[in-house]
Length: 424
Image (cartoon, rainbow, N blue to C red; front, top):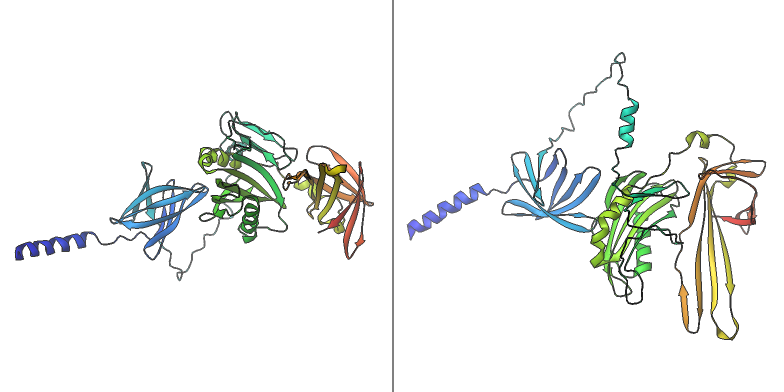
């Protein structure tokens, strides 16, 4: 018994010595992957970065290895990692990555400055290398390209369609399932909303806006996981993932990509019943990655006079209503017009219409409509606004700015007649 106990103790000591907890906390870099790992109690947290995309991770120490998962657009993928000295080996879906721990720098050490030799010949950038840089964005083979009248472009699968809609640009895959009432169980919408002065995609106002919109549209749907930031062709973007049971008693997933461009938030929303969401989430990501805008006409924008009293955001609301006698159906509509004059010479104009009606105990409402926007460059001269639109057309519009009910109003004369706008 004593010999067995001694043998057990010896084995325990050997086992303890060989299984000292490994230190995974740190920053790692490899040829294709980067990792940041921190520790919070018994849980490891951090992120994996591949290319321009960053994915949050969570893991625990299991059998002296790091085992956990990382999140991509609301879906979790498992991984495990081991470390030997300063080399981290990470495996996911039978793919192995080798990363090396980054050495910490002494913050108290004097930093050396590398001075550039002013007589050294500077490397030249050839047209060929510039062209290669412009073509660095992957284009999916066989995909179609959609071009909006604002100059915005994006690519989409060849079997998908892009029908016109007042709610934005609808991108429709084939064979979309429908509920018993004939309503689609999946929708992909590209739209825009005024940024109202928000300059940074990291602003909490961005997430607050989408949280509010999703709640109004679908009910008690909650945002899942951490925000995912990524690069797009028109700026830094963010991805939101929502899931839960909608107010129509359907389990849904909603993914929203958003990027700030000029004075607007451009977003791509994928809303689907949970069982259908994952089948097209990858294509939705590729569509967003393909969104691009024409180069800014800086030289044109910089020239010309611009009346500073016009600079800002202007709005106008137009309503119409018709009813029938005897309690029959009635129909109404409300159109919101928006006009934004930027100090840099950019101008945006758009309108969106909401239709509503009722009668015989039934009411309908088309929902909030996103403006169909047009963009251009503006100047003023002798109380006339000159606008060169991005589609190649141009226009001259008489205007005046005046005080109205304690605020500021503007009268702008279009071909269809004069319209009054209120400054926001």
